[in-house]
Length: 355
Ligand SMILES: Nc1nc2c(ncn2[C@@H]2O[C@H](COP(=O)(O)OP(=O)(O)OP(=O)(O)O)[C@@H](O)[C@H]2O)c(=O)[nH]1
Ligand SMILES: [Mg+2]
Ligand SMILES: [Zn+2]
Image 1: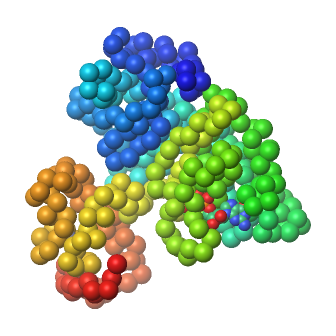
Image 2: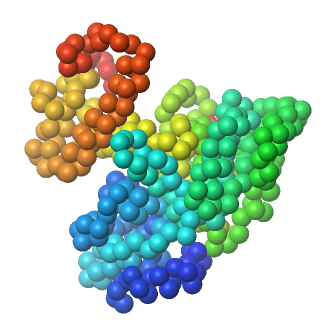
Image 3: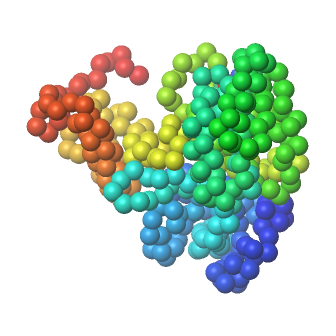
């Protein structure tokens, strides 16, 4: 695949000439997963890490490469490994605010030509949320398109009503109504996508973003929620990923957002520290804080070196931000604290039959 088929144009090339070393190659980030990245270029797809020198230039999380970004990569031919040396400026982006004292942003995706704002006709439909997504698109210079899914679950009259509610709110953005079950409207989605252009899907969890992508690719590339599962509140998609469709358009799937615009610290902890959560399944106590508790699997992993000290410190930092954020909320409702001075006196021993 040539770089221009991946969306590279003169705008990026001229910036790369200033930022990249002549020995580096330009590549596009296709997957971001806790400290490592997948990049793709004419040579293929490869896992890379960011160099320490690059990390030193990172001032905030929005300086970190995100899916869709163009980067300068040094391919160390001998070992078949590669590293990121620089991040090219973004032409467009989707981002949301991080919780915390200072204004920071978490990048969702970069260099997007069009964002599909996905809402379901069933349950999920909400015009003000739609408006917040439109603000997000506008803020990042991305053209929006509204997709209403699950039309098979509502009557034609009900669908008309939803569309008129959107229009009455003054939203003029194009709307496509689809059903991943009957296939209605899928051709319209396909026809709105072009080779070498990048599309991103955003919307609440469970609205059918990954199912729609699977329909467009014609195969079950992405995991979707099974119908029988009740997994309320759990995201099926956990990472952002760029997929190249057969006819050359690129699509980025994202995990559903609970709150548009604002990323809560607790969500950030959840998204970025899956590994720690997994390790903590083996902690002796279910409410282990991984600070000094006996039988803590996280502390054990730290000691053994299978968990990086820096990653653990970031986890603690975000977790405390998330806790103070939540406290601010509950304090408003409940003045008396019943859990004790440090809010943590009861150790809950895990029951044996717990998975
Ligand atoms: N009836 C009906 N069900 C659908 C439709 N599209 C998706 N679903 C179902 O909705 C559920 C959620 O779909 P997903 O594609 O996993 O949703 P998602 O938006 O990717 O969710 P997250 O990855 O958690 O953000 C699955 O059980 C799908 O089968 C549709 O058009 N009609
Ligand atoms: Mg999904
Ligand atoms: Zn622990």
